[in-house]
Image (cartoon, rainbow over all chains, first blue to last red; front, side, top):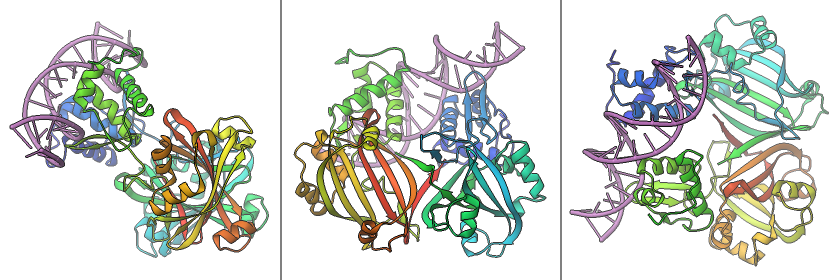
Length: 248
Length: 248
DNA sequence: AAGTGGTCTAGACCACGTA
DNA sequence: ACGTGGTCTAGACCACTTG
């Protein structure tokens, strides 16, 4: 009941249900970390069987948008959960272990989008951006220098102090900050990886010699509907770490 | 009917079915490219409902071990299919397009496993290996130098001529060669990526200056049951290409 | 027309978490 | 005891491929 009267009818039912659930998520009807209605309830609401709702939820779980907990319910995925906080961190040390990073912010300013960033974020060249630079330390060693940019329109009222408090005092990640303060939920990302030499500035930040080979990773992060919302360039020293990828 | 009398009974049924199907695949009961029995037939064979077989097959499809074709049947995945031949090639050019590689083999010999390779392949140090070196060209440019090693025991009778004929005359990949000639089906792989400088040899093969930064990718490829069967080190020039990764 | 995978339903029972 | 997700079944009908 309580019919969502917008029910398209050309796709498989479970696909339509998937879209309806995704829309509710994107519109903030159900907040990160909160439970969504039970399968039976959604089945009634959409006028389909429980099995159809189940298949829709199954796929959204595989896409990391929802999390099932047997006996409790189905929850909106969040970057604040232990275990998913560093979902996008692909670095491991030479013993094949993950290490949890410590951030030091070294820059915060506003700028205009150049052609490359504008193209990646699908915004107009010259749009206002928020730019942050930071160094990530793993086991006390500087390993990553990040240059991170987002459309300023998405982060109204952001400040250097706010970011540092969230990340350092509150032990959050940037993605949990976007989620909790700006209603932006990062769902997926693309990374393009190349190799380059450390210049003087990078060498300083990463405590390596000028000319050391680094991984250069350009990441574009997406929210619902594959909308790009964050661009970043990461420079990684691979003296003691590597980037790990699983191919299927 | 025709009961597989080995039917364990502690896991979810569909998991057990998954394992039985996987076993049949690993044992070569159904060959790459061939159709497996229909869902109804498997349901009879294992004494479960069609829905349960369906769920097992669903997961194996997601793991790239099977391929469904509506109206025709379910088929054993193969590296000879157009579209899946270069499943593991993560390189794109600067216009974000895949390019199909051309291989030139530059080395073929037998050697003994050093400690690192032995650990990755889970074999004894000093075991006999087959080692191949090649250069991959993309759009006519040398981009990748590969050093590839497998346990010699898996590739009885292999020769440089055989490999070159399969790859160059027959337009196959190494993985389709393993599959068609040695009953080894590569299912998944891990890659560990670092950055390094081109030495004289690499600079020669890749037509770059000594000291050019390169991606260094250590890959371990697995067959059924996550058994490692191939180790390779790839050196990639990122002047005109990058490594692309999707994070979910 | 027959056979295959693809979707959808309705209902049963199990396993887990909470009160 | 109850509500949740997790598994399994049986049967219906649709969509695609082949003969």
